[in-house]
Image 1 (cartoon, rainbow, N blue to C red):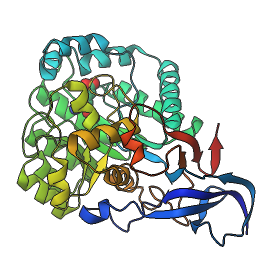
Image 2 (image 1 turned 135 degrees about the horizontal axis):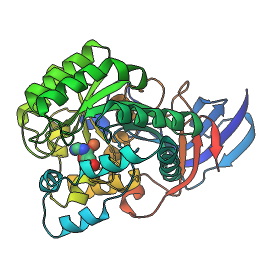
Image 3 (image 1 turned 90 degrees about the horizontal axis):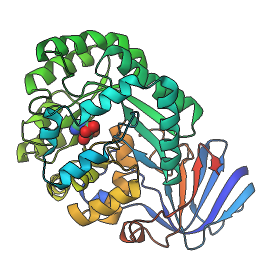
Image 4 (image 1 turned 90 degrees about the vertical axis):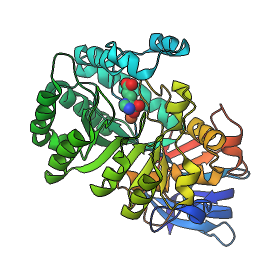
Length: 407
Ligand code: NIG
Ligand code: FE
């Protein structure tokens, strides 16, 4: 067979292969092939194995001696379409003002909403494309993007349209989520806004695959309101996600299990029953350690307990201007290892194959297997432990997206 690209001599080729989301022991196994080789034809992987004995010819041969080759990162939780930035709020937080207090004072999400409402589609697209450029240079090849900085039909639609335009223009693949129920907009009562979100669901359906909600204490959405909105969304064919147990324990993880959500995200305050119910129902737990790091609350999701109890985890940035102003998945792995005691191999599986499960893309991406999309990273690291260990730098040497080398 004549290949387009042949990568050979990788010190470690990490397949990250799994038939179901990885839990416990499997999570520790990145599927290492030493002296690995990878064959690419068109946009697909056609060979993954040892370099010895490989005799394909290829248009381009890449020597990966002393390098790790692995699947592209999948950032399965971001709020990447927004205007403005919130460094002033960061300074307030440094001086001890809590996140919910800032939100109550009209800052936080509402500050970004005001700026995002005023921005044109073109302005938002330009900003998003720059963010996607940074992401791909850091190794992210697929990203989930939520709306949620519009809080009215017009702006929520605008945000999702911008994400769609970027999906067509940028090599990164984008998965879209409707988060109309991010928080209560100014000038609305809770009851009215819940009704408004429910009646917007069918109008937004052509623009989003998932529906998400910020289930949390006031001014966000209670368990009852979450049930109303997510049940209506499910009936219309949305897959479900939840911002769950982030700032307090409301037992929304148990609800995510009951509603058979694809994922429940954050989970800093998850209970033992929450862990068991989610594991039993097969809901992926998405942990976002960049948020705890940035909010300086020291309250990380109990990743070890979750892993030990068989809950499949994924790792993401939660990139947004308020709680995680960083698009860097390598940094998230470094924080996850140090603060949640994830092993490097676990952090890698959580950022690839398990993250693919968190956005229902496990059949196409997340592992290096024949037939999967050729979304591949070549890293300047001899082994996978080195990646989160040497933190604060970009290890990515080459990104291949859909079989094409990104320059
Ligand atoms: O995922 N938790 C709620 N929403 C975002 C924060 C958004 C913001 O502060 O702008 C989050 O942390
Ligand atoms: Fe979020």
